[in-house]
Image (cartoon, rainbow, N blue to C red; front, side, top):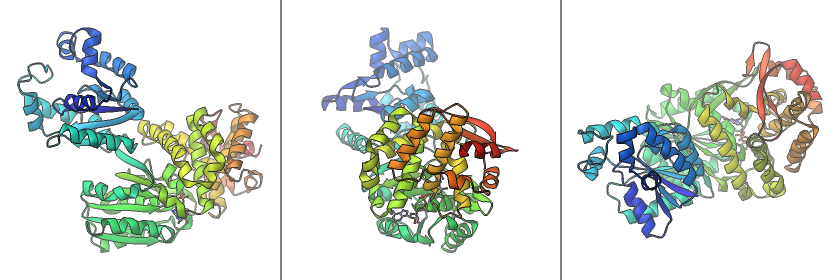
Length: 515
Ligand SMILES: NC(=O)c1ccc[n+]([C@@H]2O[C@H](COP(=O)([O-])OP(=O)(O)OC[C@H]3O[C@@H](n4cnc5c(N)ncnc54)[C@H](O)[C@@H]3O)[C@@H](O)[C@H]2O)c1
């Protein structure tokens, strides 16, 4: 895996690349590689053939060399291309180097060979940095190089790379996800970066012990308010949200408050909705403690509460500022909840394709017994979700794929009066969805058998026949958020890696799912 160094001209990419080279790393300087390939410098290409031509050459070469070195110093404008930038984010660790405009200008000097700068070097630099703000923000870490020695920066970049950070690329709203044992220790740094006036910590009775760790770490640094909710889906209501609003306002929360959810998907959804609406929106962060919340609910920005009429019927999009998925928290998670989380991981694997499904099939029995074994499938599930969210944050298209298994799953969950867990219902919903896939000719009987076997091995219920006979199911499906008049946008699965959206009448979904 490669480290990519990005940032505006003068930020120190080449200097840092040299320091890496001196420390024994294999280094590619993309500008030098372009010159070696084309025979003239990048600056000369801009002057004679235009910037667009340089970008075309640069894109092709960056893709060709992506795995050819340990460290690649990119050109200042390489990451302008969204598709390439997202590929680099997936392929390795992308670091943006920064410095103030004054420092950049001083380092560049008279700009003799910088055709993009013209005569007003400072002004041009400021405009370029501003225009590329979204592109530079989409990175695993931003490092100011003003006062750091190259040696110290090499160590810092290596340390970041070793942590295998994950990033949700959304322009200047980009945020990081840390997955691993002990990552909650990062909470001080993350909070310090955001400089909130108050932290409102929201947890439930079962996750309070994990919230206490966060509380102790932040207590000396920032005014804190702790809110402990009653656990369970039954409390994912407006009443709970109102209690968070009241407590936060009474404690003196202002618009620079930060709400941190420490808990499963229910805490995340209610605290997130409270944060999205409090004072028209305050910052929000997630410390997920259930496997389901780590793999799915804490990432992507959906927040919601339930109504008597059905699940998640009121909510808002509100992205977190950071996510810390500390695997140590899984030690106290009940086995039943652990299995529930695996259901969302199966869903993500089926969306991703054959490789991810095979990993689960191979490791199924260990995944049930050992929380730390889930790290790799969890990372894969996150990668799948992030790739989809990054393309379609507001669900105008492919984000709906994440709803695989959820149309029937949510209806089963609501019909059970939330006696079944979300993950258990998703498992039943996945079986139902595969049956619909078979009925429509997208999936084969062996795909259905494969999905069923995998869920069975993970200890999830797969016998959907009884629940599918429940007459209330139809009403719940009719009220699904993906409803469009009489039809529901249903995610029809085929083989792993293949799903499509079809509008189907609720009654027809139920009859096909019954098989
Ligand atoms: N926003 C999204 O994108 C999204 C995605 C998927 C699911 N969800 C929502 O997430 C919810 C399901 O999440 P969930 O399964 O985490 O539910 P949950 O929050 O109810 O957690 C399940 C149970 O485990 C307990 N728990 C959580 N972490 C624990 C720990 N470390 N130790 C001991 N007990 C612990 C909780 O108190 C609760 O009793 C549903 O409401 C679902 O709609 C949201």
